[in-house]
Length: 66
Image 1: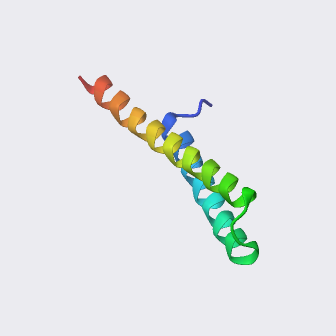
Image 2: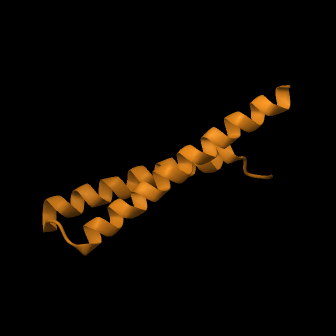
């Protein structure tokens, strides 16, 4: 079974939410540090990739309908 861009996009969004949760938890317990910024950077990339994959899936499906 092949993974669709929609499924991959949701996985990336889930990972972005998970990294955001870890970053918030780390800031509350240890304050701002390198690891906090690293987690936020990873979450940002995952959210961006997830949205890009979902939008690609929507555009691809619309193009197939034509």
